[in-house]
Amino acid sequence: MSLERSQKTFDLSPILSGSTDRVAIERDWQIDLEENGIKSDRLLFSGECRRAADEILLSGKITSPLHSVCARCLAPVSETFSLETEFVVLKEENDEEERDVLLLEGEEANLFGAVLDTLSLNLPLRLLCREDCKGLCPKCGKNLNEGDCACEKKEIDPRLQGLADFFK
Image 1 (cartoon, rainbow, N blue to C red):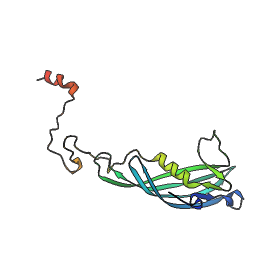
Image 2: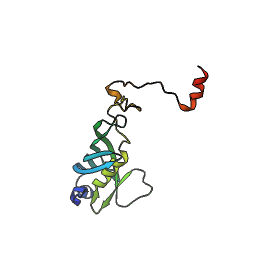
Image 3: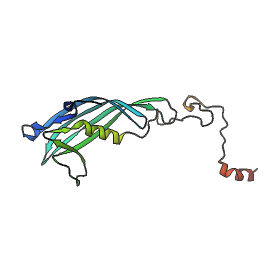
Image 4: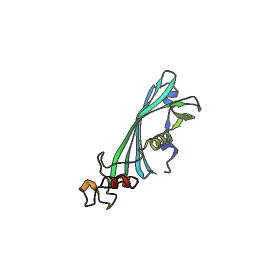
């Protein structure tokens, strides 16, 4: 992901100079991200930066297409990740700040880094092809979403086998 500085940063000079209170932001980055078996090749941010009282807030929506395999049946899965987010823009780091922070570097802030970090921290741990996915048969490996398999379903926990014999 070798992006030029101008592609990563956002110029806050219109807000800092007081010439405007709001600036719209639209960014579309081509990325190559893979975490926990989930891949993404594009990252979009749409939002605005605004002055609110004595601070500058950057709010918007992060969107990214995700590609992986279903955690239960291993079928290919593609879905769109979407997250509303807000950052407070600060001139220097503040350990007491409990919100997500975007640090100023002169009159610019590294928007790409903050958005990518937010995406990485909020990615789902796994993707499912559908909520009611039945997965694979543990014995024969058949995809149970396509129908039942011929395997015997009655399985007794080996720790309780002695109890099963007791009731015969």
